[in-house]
Length: 450
Ligand code: AMP
Image 1 (cartoon, rainbow, N blue to C red):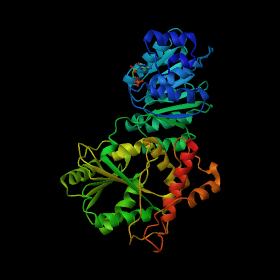
Image 2: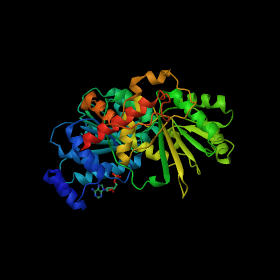
Image 3: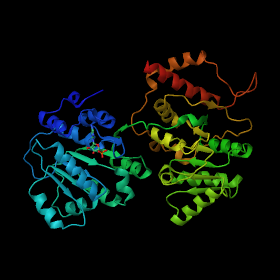
């Protein structure tokens, strides 16, 4: 097991850790350390209690050099005043043998006192977005010297409605800096801001522990596009009566509507939706109808599902594969609860293969692939959103499958027995090559790992 000695920290910092009695870095501290030291932007997925505060403070302070400046070099944005106080305390603990000036600022208290403290010079500033924005607009707080921006509890900052404050702070920052972001979960809102203001930060996350995957049967269908996915789903819903209480996941609210319209055609009034554009009242109504069994299924997004407490889900359907591997585990964990067997079915289009491989790596297993049932129409068309390449970037590490080159895939191909979707000489279904493509990518990845 690693110790902080392995981090090769300056004496003053090591001594502070010794005083705190901290010997071993936590997993998020270990994983973030080299990324932050490298100077790259980082997106860490970690909850409170994982040691995330020290995960960013230690590498930042490791590189600390004395500089004579008034304006802060490090800005740490957090959602609440309690957290400001807490983070300031953590910085002070770590810097007790260093000369670092730390200040916490937040709303609800006299702004003039904070103005004065800022004017006296600050190295590490911790604050809530509202107060930071006010002082920056006042020109009391300047970002000219800023080298590191930390956004802690990113999702919570947005949940609390600080989006405007956050984006206006970001637009006021001109200088080049390192961005270090932490969020408990990847939400659509976080993703949107990442897209707009940050340049592909490296993702660092922890595998959630103790998820009882054994109780969940996982399967997947490959499909060339979203419309084919919907065709398969309609077929399943029409033929499989065990699909009694189904939770459908898609990646954003727009697609919730697309999926809903499709299901509504064939199964009028059997399905409902929950997403952030609906009123609270509507969402509660949908939930109640689902709970009572009036609705057979709900279509939702990760963000919305977070707050839902629904039981006895027989099936989780991933109509779109989540961008963050851990999110897959959260999703399928909705079924198979409390001694009940659950089924998780995923539908994978070609642009989602890499996400699938990332999840399989996380779980250390391969999800069995099913053949598309006879009679399901294979659609040719891709919907507009499927053409939008940018939305399908995988946040985090890219798995490079191209390296092995085509010859490797081809060779592997020949040796492989594949179910072409029917016995004997029947015409192979058009989708069989999709299954083979996924298998080939898996094989390439296995080989690379060795
Ligand atoms: P956080 O997730 O940052 O809120 O940290 C949770 C708690 O763990 C805080 O009280 C930290 O002081 C403590 N902590 C952080 N790093 C370590 C470590 N390496 N060993 C033991 N405790 C730690």
